[in-house]
Image 1 (cartoon, helix red, strand yellow):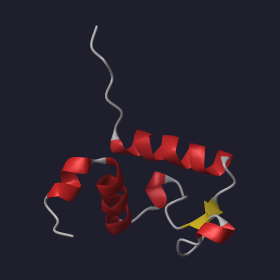
Image 2: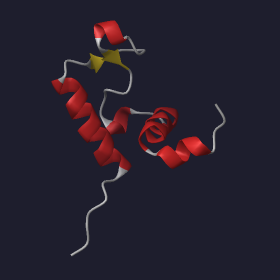
Image 3: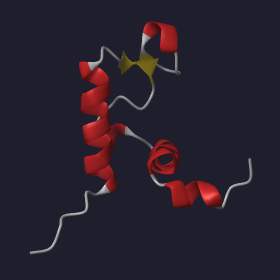
Length: 68
């Protein structure tokens, strides 16, 4: 039996669900004190840049190619 590797969309859904359970909601920018974040929307509503930003936060190898 092979182990299921979650897709990026599934990982986003899990992340979003966890954030919402912690009180975070959608906002046009990240506002930690107000618990607002622009990526707390359904995957289908994210544009390519937003999807890439999420990918870089969950895939360490994506960050290794970008210099700090």
